[in-house]
Length: 178
Image (tube, rainbow, N blue to C red; front, side, top):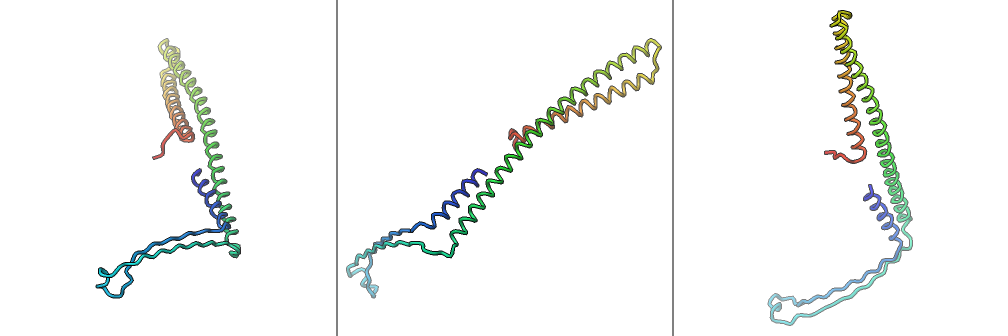
């Protein structure tokens, strides 16, 4: 985008230079025989000739074509600048969104860890109750099922944290897109 901006600036400058006069200098040097016969090519002397030319072109009126080309180039440059601004805003938005998503994912991970620890404690207490004859086998099975579910939720949230981290790194430009 920066290269396009620089090229756009150069294009505007190039169009504005069209109002300046153009000066040209031409020079030529020739060495030739100037003979009509092919045999004279080697036997007769050759002639030197030189010419110098100088010209000035002063733009007087071009039907406003330069004016409109300058306006068109300036509009294209303005469009490039707006695209750069949009890109910067989009990147900033993606970075902020990635930071918020990562923060929320970490908070959810901590909650899932606490839920998993609580479910593990419930399993431990339920097994003790069952061994003492106070609880039923169904309570132990339900507690273990809840513990497995909390583990699944924890690992799923851990995966979401990793995805959020990758998205943030991508927004920050730390990952390569191949």
